[in-house]
Image 1 (spheres, rainbow over the protein chains, first blue to last red):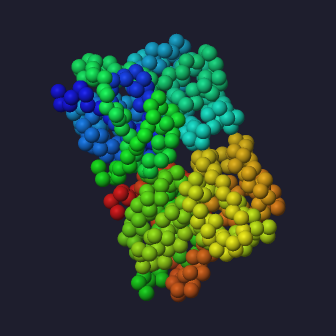
Image 2 (cartoon, rainbow over the protein chains, first blue to last red):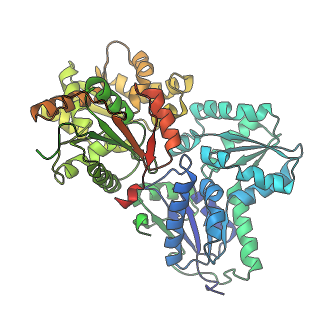
Image 3 (cartoon, helix red, strand yellow):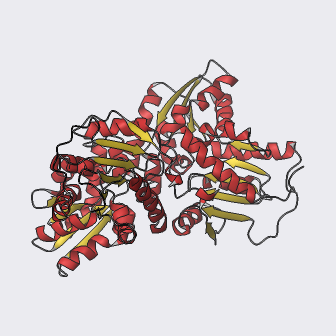
Length: 273
Length: 273
């Protein structure tokens, strides 16, 4: 085994959104240490090309490897959809994304075989959710809907605002018309809109949160490979946070959503990796 | 003189927004050639730190200098507010931004000495508009309002949409309550919302478009320094476009707003400059 069981898990995202994945890992794998990287100097990824996302993701993976992580979680739907497959062939530690765990659970959840997918333009366009779902069951139809306004609305803090409800109604209408019974929250910011979206889609539609499913997948993977950290850490900082832009804004957002008080975030120049 | 009069003008922005400035240069200085750079791989700048904006702007200026431009226009309010002053001391060709020309005209326009400023968080926070306006007349009050949802709304194409009107009403309310008579469109995307904003603020408020004022300032500067291109170019491509991410999306947007058919855009790796 290359790394110790006590080594941290590397988690990265284009910015703050991946904190919803880190949050699920903290809740479900409380013994694991985390090194989180948010690419706040180049956020967002959702409107950028595959080639650019791959270049950025490789730089981040190189940085995380300097932190001697034992596994990496790509906590960004766009990077999971566009860069994960290539990178997993280039490194020798386990790496998982948020797309496949979410897609698999959605495939198991739907009864009428109609799944809605909301996410960034890049995630929806990449088609990885559809391919993964149809590998489970080729009869399932996946209806994708890019929702480019959701991230800025979340970052504005308008989680239950009338504007957000109106925008969500408009984005969800084509999905509801197609009679979906399962909706994948295909962007890490979207779990923060969960209650607004739930009200709009009603009880007939099950929401799938890939962040939660990814934490469960990570747990299975670590167990399978005998890499779980069995010792409860008494380190003062079991969770370390790095960003590519200023620490300040990140830390504020982090503290508003994590079950952990982030006291320190470090800025690094990711272009050097 | 370092460069020929026939050399192009370098124009840069974080993405597509600066095309509203390029458009004004094309209209008002039809003899000038342009090299445009849009940093689409790292867009937007408005939520990022001064240090990051400065690093990015320096890379772009280095790239533009390889294109032997005779002058540079920083067609991005955020970069104008955060990076221009430093960079102008580091290079030996004229460089102007969009903030000062817009601020000066706003100071000359207001009668009741109350100016509203809308822009990104970084632009409003930078305080350069207020400082420039108060250097003209210290009695003028400048009321700033960040509008982080406007850029994604413009990019979604919802220019006159009910959602955009509702968001605009909310952002403008504190400015109208303060009885402003002049409103600076302090982000290069905002001229595309001009008619929506004009309807909401009414005839009592004059809109100032820094893109137009910047083209006029450039004209004065070139004339003053004897650097105007007097020969009408018959080059096939008087306007050249470069981006840091894929060409496709950029070109579509460019063709929707420019009085010129953009046939080719080149992608470069800006991190190498």
